[in-house]
Image (cartoon, rainbow, N blue to C red):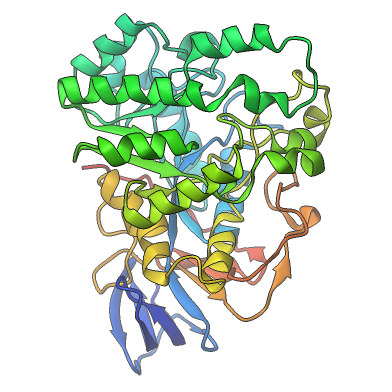
Amino acid sequence: MPKLLIRNARLARPDGSIIEGDLLCHDGVIERIAAQISISADETLDAGGNLLLPGVIDPQVHFREPGREYKEDLGSGSRAAIKGGVTSFLEMPNTDPSTSNQAALDDKLRRAAEKCVANYGFFIGATPDNLDEVNRAGPACGIKIFMGASTGSLLVDKAEDLERIFANGSRLIAVHAEDEARIRARREQFKDRTDVAVHSDIRDNQSALLATELALALSRKYRRRLHILHLSTHEEVELLRRDKPAWVTAEVIPNHLLLNVNDYARLGALAQMNPPIRRPEDNAALWAGLHDGVIDFIATDHAPHTLEEKRKPYPQSPAGMPGVETSLPLMLTEMKAGRCTLAEIQKWMCHGPAAAYGIRNKGKILEGWDADLTLVDMVHARPVRNEEMFTRVRWSPFNGRKLIGWPIYTIVGGQVAFDRGKIRDGVRGRPLSFT
């Protein structure tokens, strides 16, 4: 493979310190870091003193392929990812058909190899009757259980089905924790309201807490590795602060850190997602949980729908927002405002997800580690613009918000994939391995 030399960079170390120097990539790995490297390379980039970070790992995206490619596909989603400095992603199984057996998983891997410019991995989806498949199909980063919020075969909301899955096997289980029975009851209770803000009342904090409590109890009973997806409430943070076994992890998404119910007035159904945006006190609790380690890392739950779909009256409007290409600038902007540190950003977005899913040699700028990197501009602020989005749906809930930390270059496997606003031809990501 070609050699890539990056000169004159400010390199982020895992502890949050910064060193100035050069970095050499060869055969897909970081071969050397030094104050100055004098070598002939196939390509040399002048970093111009900008900040070089490990590539972000986004451990929860919905890229809609197969079945809903008009919203997104693996190619467009991966291009949006690298525009945002995301060099690896883990994709969810609620496609059409769902990724709930080996044949469907093999099909996704084949599609990804043909078109993904970022590295990729996939969840296998649990149904009430595919226990053998979820434990055997691979390579998969884990089993996804929709305890609520899904339709069709991927909804697993009966206690006996959940218990059977937790009791058999050893693979990581990741849960969408919302209590389906409570949601149905509250939907009936609020049936006369059609304003989109009722979404947060129907899928209230208690519906999330009940499901998280059940998943945690099953995980403890069987000592089963559990990951709680998109934590959204202060009650769940308090629960985990009291009772979080060493084999349990949790994540939060920028939407739940930075948006709340007050944003419905401005965004309407663009702010509709599952679990829904919450109240300002939930924002504050989630930030506190990140800082003290109750919440382990950040994902995006990138879940695009078209603007035409989002303009439908509630409840016909679908739940979900794009986010993969704005997560890093959003968090770096919060860092510059003093809300978090460079060490925390790397833990939450780079090596933290890698450790949780057993992805080796990714998420740190160290010699011998994979050369997945992003060079970001920490000086010039630029607004999010819908028309500049790479996601196929071409909108963001953060449209108009000024952010710093936009990637200038993104490097995947030692090759420049994103180059000052454009995707380079010929670069392909690789399938991730999970230990």
